[in-house]
Image (cartoon, rainbow, N blue to C red; front, side, top):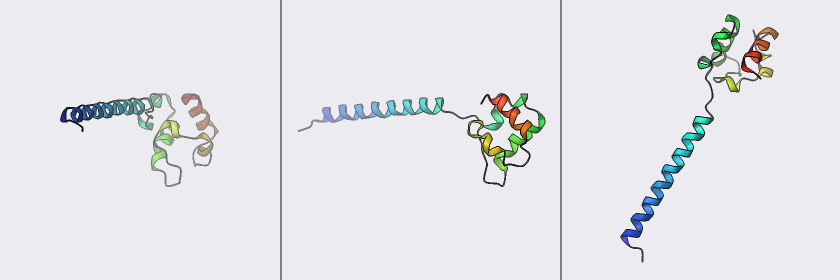
Length: 97
């Protein structure tokens, strides 16, 4: 037979476990945070043309709409209007890959 004391100890253990999971999840989210286009630290180093193209990405009517710098694929950018070789090369140089 389980006593009230054992039951309360088990509840405390479960609560500690849930807090541990929450802390781990917060760490994962913090480490995997993606950078929104408007908050990118190198946005001020971009040419006016590249900045306008980046700001327009999330609002395009085409299928390709991205909100985060890390999600932008340069291969797919080549298909979009306005993204020429100079813009893509500048973007690759600033982003680093």
